[in-house]
Amino acid sequence: MLSTRLFLAQTGTLPSAPTFAPPSEPVRQAVVTDCVRALTSRFVFVQPFVSGSVIRKAGTVIAFDGQDEIRTPYNNCILVMPNLRPRRGHTAVRLAKRLNNKTDMQA
Image 1 (cartoon, one colour):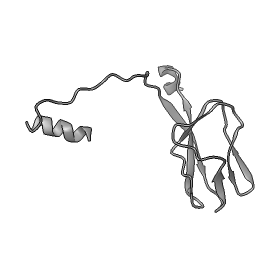
Image 2 (cartoon, one colour):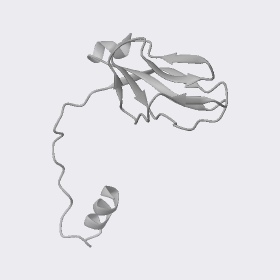
Image 3 (tube, rainbow, N blue to C red):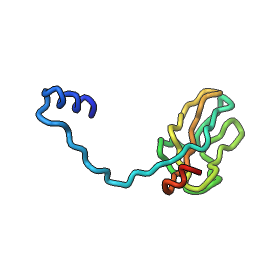
Image 4 (cartoon, rainbow, N blue to C red):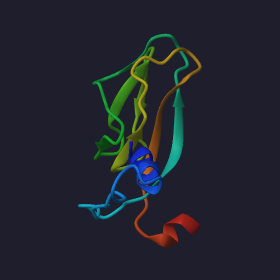
């Protein structure tokens, strides 16, 4: 939508280019550390998570893959693109850790 508005402004169809509001919160970066694949056809999350959900405590059960428990590996684990109905062999969720500063990206 924004790219369409920019294009229309540059071609003269719109009177001016859209303005950008500064972000209301500071931008934070995260790095994906794990990719959880469904090993069985009975993979199920314990609740309907959305992308960006933060699980505060390490070791929290977030899903079951058959009888196996899927737990968060660290505190403040971010769930990235949880697939609430994964097929066997498909990615169910990615786990990410928030970066504190620029030096974290180099480690």
